[in-house]
Length: 131
Length: 288
Image 1 (cartoon, helix red, strand yellow):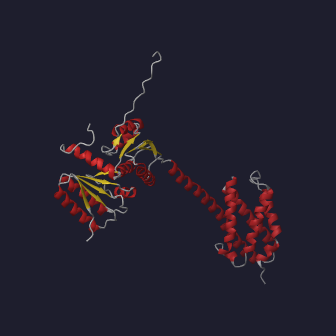
Image 2: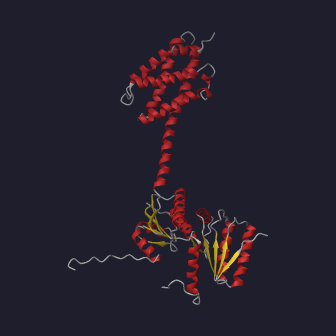
Image 3: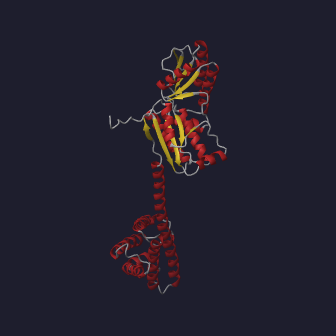
């Protein structure tokens, strides 16, 4: 069965979706990701969807679900690299992905995650000068 | 034996043209300042040539016949060129109908001895020429319609520029009413530009939007949400007192959107978010 790889990077989990998601794949991703968050105790999840060009309401919901699930397991979710067409589609579908942070690219997404975790977890090593 | 109508008219071609020209020239409303008589003669000649060339006993009864495609083409050309020269549709209509008069006059003179045939032919010719007259009107309106369509798309194009005001800050002044189609264009342009420039903040300036109703607000909120999904922040600026009033009266919730009264304060907010500072350069004193 096809699976989307989930990479662990320190306190974060990294998911890059390089193929168009179909429903089964998306539900698998949801289950795997929550399991991974539990297993690794990750503080942040970064999902790169820059290669995703087609999105439907189901995918939108899955993304939102992942965000909410991670949230209650004490991990922040950042979705990065959304294409304009995808963003417009999601808005037209009425899905605003509440509970999910967004960033323009992976780099910015990482910064955002670091920043978010800085605020919530004092033990994480400071990389930015906090204000 | 019945007279062959097309042959008869072909034979009398010169006379028809003369009559037609006389009718046209005698008309008070002739705009001789727009076109010289020679040009008019040439134009009329071409049309008459085409008409008499295709007219026969069969297609005279059928004004929609494909035989007349070429005639209609010539007519459309005349209608368009006349419209550009400043003729009114009425002038062009008269031009075609005066040809009808000329044809009927000629027929009357030629077929005196057979009133029934004369009547039949006149009716057919009448119908035919009326259809041609309508063609000129249609072309005229079509021409206008094309111009309007072009202008509409041009307005949509010009009125939604995305400006890079600063590294990482985009501004999008919206001028004119926002409808669904324009929102789509605005949204696409903005999101595309965000991707290309890697901007984190977009300022939507609505000081040029005459009125905000619930639909417009809906479109604005959509744009803001889409920008958020892309990972950028969207500020709405240029909210005039009247707009603030209508928004609140309509019960539109803009509380989750950052709104600023002017572009300047939006820009200041953006600088704050990006941790940028603007300083006034201390002028060196003259006596130092």
